[in-house]
Image 1: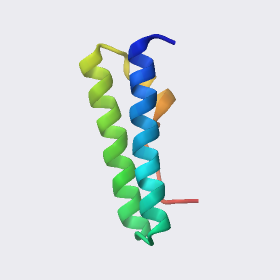
Image 2: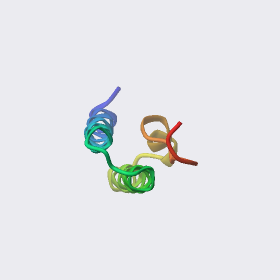
Image 3: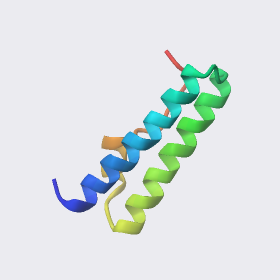
Length: 69
């Protein structure tokens, strides 16, 4: 794994931790889904800035398709 992929993984981990914290604090399902979608967009944007293919973003942070399971 190169440095760019490590950076994406660290970003995805931080975003997921923030969403988990919001869930523990009682955020609504709609708010959590919106946060997940925003996080996925942010990871894609950073991948694009680093010159990584979108498939890398999908590996570390796939776009959510529906609410929490």
